[in-house]
Image (cartoon, rainbow, N blue to C red; front, side):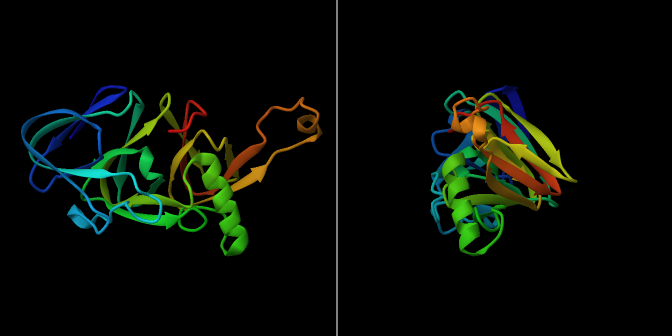
Length: 222
């Protein structure tokens, strides 16, 4: 059970068969017989593949036993996401506060499974540019299965549905997405930008497909 105590702290129940994985340094306090151990890149509970691979290197801790844990990190806002086994959640590992250890976690390239906008050299370059702007780098994490995930953001998030047409978001406001979406980076320059009279939104992410994209109420990176 995940209980939001306020916008920045969540209380999570831990029990045998319901272990929790969280970023190191996120535990604020706990009660009960709870034990913590670091996760290596080789794997972990519930078939979890450690994110200490390919640039997704946020250190994670496994909590097991019986009790309740308080999690929060750096005063940032929290967003709870429940996965029902249909659409995977894609988000950089630094955005993940905690999640059920039963969820499957894989590391995918931003230009491929992460929704980077095509393969080949062009796709790799677009993925690299997008990763630099969003803070993702070349790799990102996908979580799938049944369970809950808590994400970090500046100022909270909103989830925008994507179905027909496209949704455009600011690269720094992007937090993650659900479903098989294609995300491309495009320039939005005009003659006004060239003479200093434009909107200032020179780069944009275009999102297409079936799913939803999460954006934060800030352009500040983690």
